[in-house]
Length: 472
Image (cartoon, rainbow, N blue to C red; front, side):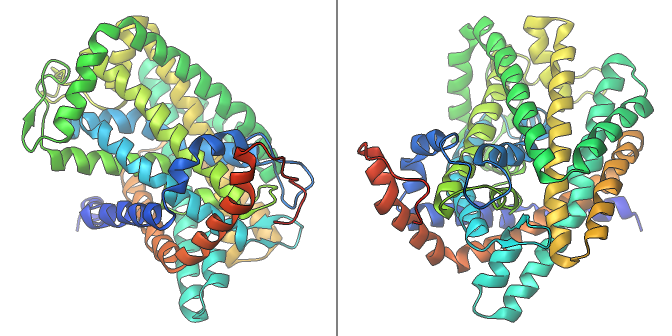
């Protein structure tokens, strides 16, 4: 039996139409259930990122919590995933990424609210939270709640070593080897040392590093992408029109911006939603683990703060990659060696090269390295907290940190097709108990949302000063 083929088939099933419909459907339901308040309060949420006081219960600031969550979500999917979606699903896939992200705002808000509401303090005084604790404490049927929690935590631990570790390290080493012939063992050693030094000190160290690395890498990518878009601006309007035309056309062949790409609306929807969810992780239940560590006066406030991660990840960073590719005129370019359209990181490099020439490789290599390294940091914290839920022993947790850092070397220096499919499947399976939890506890989320809206948001929008130290 071909294990690789079997795992690929299982992965295709897990990430198939049913799962994508479940993810987006939950987002639609929550958006309506919350009376569209996550959309209405998006600007308010962005302002909240920097406004919390330091004396509330928690381990790190709300900003550091958001950066930790973003460190795990802003990754290779923003560079490789967008390019792949636009090749397989046509330019219209980017529109469906935006649509799924719009409903993902409500999903991310809801799961973050539950994470803060049901968090616990562990044996060393740190906050522990996430979907597993919401399932454990929020479900009236304790057997169902604890069973779902154990399944979710197990899937997170397994996914952390693959999707959050080895595949990210492999992306960095492969990019640097392909572009500059840097031996994979050198890249692996650097990643291992940098990651281990950061991880051994726990969430406070991860939060500090993420609060520096994430804004820096986002600013670098934003500026370089914006330069490409401005230089190629003449092609942008046509590119945007083609995106929307193909997103809602039942059988389309791309025009000038898409070359020979052929994709129906359903194909665009499938790849746009799949890559969008893969990028921003709304509904998977990973980001709320970081939300639970934040110092905040109200679960809903941190829900709004962490919700902005989906906005920044998909509606900003993914959009920039999509516009760079669409305006470059290289979408649909055929690779002479394979006879297939150029895709993935190579397509993004070609698009950046229209302005930066040979330095296009450098831009993507730097961006990919920073994006993937930050993902390693964020996912270690997710895996650690999931393992802590299963095993309370602190020696095991400390060993996990060291082993996690060392395994990055393995990921950087070996072929990972089997690991990728297995870990991607675990990543998808996380969503099932998490989405059940969100639907089951949607009344809890709505109660928190409406209370916070009445007591805080409306007053602050009217210019009243709310004492953040107060118990709300």
